[in-house]
Amino acid sequence: MRTRVEPVTPASLREAGALIRAGELVGMPTETVYGLGANALDARAVLRVFEAKGRPADNPLIVHVADRDAILPLVREIPLAAERLMDAFWPGPMTLVLPKADCIPDAVSAGLSTVGIRLPGSEAARALIRAAGRPIAAPSGNRSGRPSPTTAVHMLEDMDGRIPLILDAGPCAVGVESSVIDATGPVPVILRPGGVTPEMVARVAGDVRVDPHVMRPLSEGETARSPGMKYRHYAPKAKTVVYRGLGAPEAIRRRYDEAETAGERPVILGLNDRGYGARAFISLGGADRPQDAAARLFSALREADARGATLALCEAVDEKGIGLAVMNRMGRAAGFDIVDV
Ligand code: AMP
Ligand code: MG
Image (cartoon, rainbow, N blue to C red; front, side):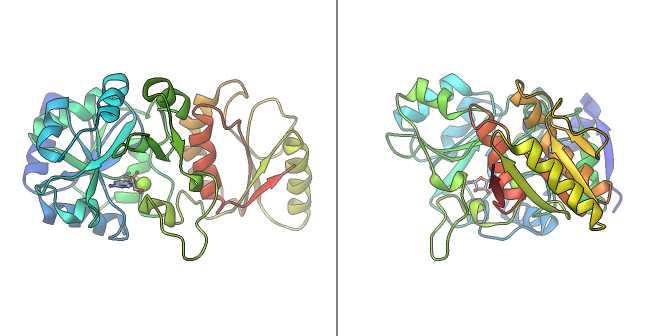
């Protein structure tokens, strides 16, 4: 199968909608990352998503809708706190975990009694869902374990030959996946940080909890509240280490020079103006612009591989606001190999 990349036009949307209805997979641009979309109500189509990604069957998919009313048949109940979050942050980079209705195939929710639902901010994503006339189940469009794609070309790298069509709406504005929020109880729990930050949720819901595994790995015997927490994710081929704290730039420079002397190919993923000099460097933007780090992180991890790096030295950003989402992805890319300096 040849994979075509097409700009978003009325014709490509019509074609993509027909493919989804026929049980095929389509690359879906969103404001967070590119997704691998299938008809959410078709169990066979959903199984193809797991196959194309090489995704473990116990890691559920997010169901995307084009308007609020479309979620009513998909869930059993919408608690008041969830309603408030939808009012405040939809359309946008927020997935709510709610009790699922029977029409959602078990393959989507990986056998859980809940389902993650999102109304994306991206016009292109909503246009595709409308063209399909179905809710679209979509995980990130990378092969399992790889950094999520933030451009159509990155998605093509991973999915070439596996799916018929990727719609190209340019680079993703947010650049990290949606916040996943368990909204089944009175206090929302952030299972995966994203563009809708804990601070934003607390302002609307009065209270918020952040699952402790956002910034540390599961230890043996612990169950994941969000199955995706269990898996190695976002990782480039290079060994990846994160340096956190005021001493980070200096520690990174020293480690880089030692590694280079030892014959390795190090690269720095860091903030601008840190005195990295002529060392191989991929910018995550300015220290005062955490949104830039979010938008750049996944392409920077891919770039490290493209340059043949054997060691990626990453500079931490502040864990405030969207910085928590950046640090969750960076921490996981490094297998939580985080050095405090
Ligand atoms: P991805 O689509 O690749 O960004 O992955 C979606 C993530 O959302 C998964 O890794 C899960 O951790 C999380 N998720 C989806 N549905 C649920 C659910 N019903 N309960 C908890 N977490 C979920
Ligand atoms: Mg993913």
